[in-house]
Length: 597
Image 1 (cartoon, one colour):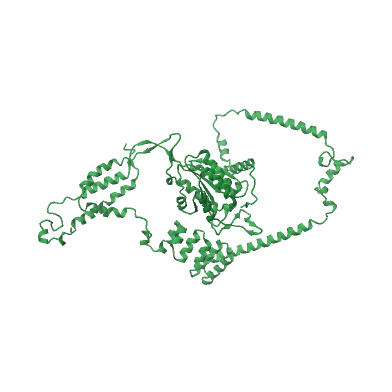
Image 2: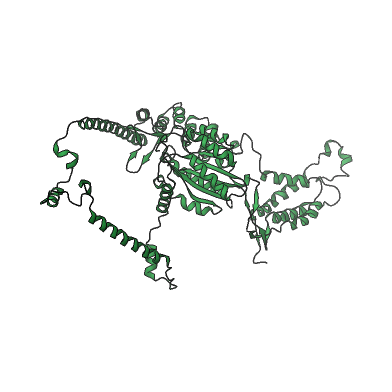
């Protein structure tokens, strides 16, 4: 028992450190004036109370029993444990299916580093608070595919997050309606208790809203939405291809939080914008702590847990507390314990009493930029909070209220992130005019200037390509000479072969059946024989494949183990082939009204 003895909550032992404060509190109460001297004349009070303020009898201090009671309470609250007992294992009845948007718009960089990375980090946060509960994951673009079914093993889902990328999807698009239908089927197949669907995306087209409502109306599952991205939007970069363009212009993908919130409310769900902390998880009530639906596992599993036996010590503390019962004893305990009790929430926090707003601005912005923007009044700090929360246009307007080169520099950064490159260039010029030695402003100005040049070059190049295609189209209407007729479009090396095949008889060769007016009987017979031979080989291969190979019980050699270690682990390629096979089997029709991003 001594070897297994430990404390489940050892921090409660810190209550023993309050013993010196308790001694000082009792001493002050014993030496202080009781207050009767203001009501009773001294000659009448002196026979009753001595000079020190205590009665004529020897004092019985409550310090000793109160100190022992405090030590006993500290040990009881710390949770002494030395034995294990089987405990029935329950799991939350709250099942959740996460539908992650893997369209190209999730690569937009309006939030750092991009929307998809933010969404993956948030999924990890959700899995951390849902330990032991059932969670599934699917992805969608032009079609929806299941990554992991409902499982309570969070590590399985986390292991697949790194390989999720739009390039593994077999078709582009934004078919959120198919994702919701797949999620509802997952919940119907194996979800105990209540089920919910969480869609992490930047936008769901209104053309899919009726299908989503029809799917969920009969299933009874609420739809929650987690919005990634900003309303100002951002460009969509592709590796080694630049930004996605439409008609020569860079596509700006914008999030629609208001529309997603309306869709979620219409299905009985909630909506929230993605945050850096867990406020969005708490608002969407994704934690199993927010649900009272806990069920026993079907297998009747149990887990051995350490038993907290500290409650037995509470019976020992009761008589000690009664021994310390006298006027002033519990007042001293209250004076000692009140400072360590949790304080209720108020408009002014405890830290506001000791620090100015500018001293706490950095911490506020790091914890919750949106809340910091609402609480901060200084233009520069407020603008920084808006910038961190992705509200670049609002940040630029707030920075414009401040004066100085630093404010102009920050305003230029916000305008550049908002896509207003010309205005950003002017803001950098204003900052350099006030402080020519500002290296950061000069560096960012150079980057914005290069982006403007590249944008102009891309626009000129697209115009040239358009003019070139128009000119080629006009030339295609001209009459062609005999060498460019459809019957003579051969490579130069094919002419001699054709002449050799056709020499002597002037008839088309058997190798060109499209030019022959009669079928070749000999070639048909050869093809039939070849087909029979191939089918025989396939049958023999099938019979050989059905016979199981003998299992070798010999251990692998060192060279074989090294060869196995060199085999690349590519789960992304496996998912890509799996999704492609599913897409081909389903033959999902493409939606002409959908965008490829």
